Length: 75
Image (cartoon, rainbow, N blue to C red):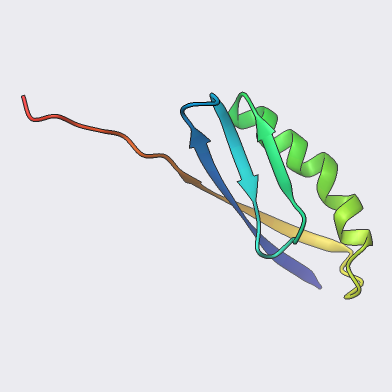
């Protein structure tokens, strides 16, 4: 059975990195300078985190949700 995992990603404008975390994968914290690098890092780290999970999940489906905050001034 495939287990869905939602990855919450946000852009940190001060550090200039994407930060990814997930309530579905406790312990997942990734920082990367690009969107693709962040996805690659999550895919590299997640299998090790899931091995520590007592539920024995073997196959997952990842959904990435992005968040960024922008200021917009009236013209």
